[in-house]
Length: 487
Ligand SMILES: [Zn+2]
Image (cartoon, rainbow, N blue to C red):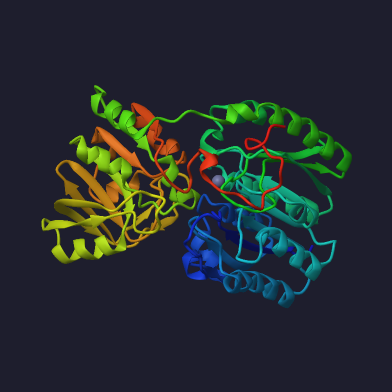
């Protein structure tokens, strides 16, 4: 048998439409052609899973582009079309394509393209026709649309949050496409969209309502006819028509069954919508509790300024309170402030630093704060992930640590959600030794930090990823929708 030819690619961005930071192709640091395989082969990423399975089955891997960026504002139209055109060009120039495997985020928005994934998939479908299977993996925060579902054959969404199963879903998607190409199965996909917009704060998969919903999903999957059931609580910080939670089911040639599962599970999800809400702790109370705690590390989670959700990661209000209360033995990751990094490099290690830092991206994250301290370390900001995307190199730009009388603040050139404690170690701070850790992250940090922390306090600070959705002005989302309207 001729080896199957499978196109692979990755286009991942979670777009926060409230962010004023425009996203460009440069932010994706894209890999093209065989470089994509070289860079991601052997990693625990979705593409790593694709490559491993396809290679095992002797398939011919045809790479397109691997583009993944930190969440931020909408992508420029020009750069979005560059990514799409790169993929379409490879597909057009490849004869006898047997299948397409894409690792997508599912909540990507370009300036004039509110459904970046659906639009891409439609173009691929138009190019290849209805017979070539297109199978995708999606983030649990994807905004499922009819356009997406209509233009692919199967969807594998992450089942974990923090997302530690990207590789596993990549493996499943690749195995499914191989079986489809061999004619062993015919995947069909259905979905059900729900008029609910839960904040991301309680979308974790180890506690809260997702636990029982995922259990139900697993029970449906016990049937041979059911290939996959996934739940998308979705990303709420996008003012577009396709927001809202969704359920997706993939079966072997039984669309009616797939739809039935989506409807049943969708009803169950909608019924427990209130359970997605969670109270937060005020800045003053949170800092006080952390200082008074007998033992650390106590984690202060700055959930509203989470670069993992498109916030700049330069908010200052919790840091201001820590300094005011003279907290000691504190690690802060991170404050994005390229100007401050330049200054830190100028004064050098052990040099004295005195300037206003943070809150320079927009007016939603407090005021810049004047700090005086000693520069402890300066690095290139590159480290290899040991948690989540294990093996993948992170690059947060040049980085400096300033010690403000016992509060060590990591200053970075780029926005970064410190979900991997390696960001501390790379910069000379041992996070397990700290009494207090202030993290700009909503929840992905839990996978690596919870095992060694004494308590996690979710703080009600200002910012673009605040769980309090009433802080945002939406104009394009469908109404009525919970929690804004009574349904
Ligand atoms: Zn996500």
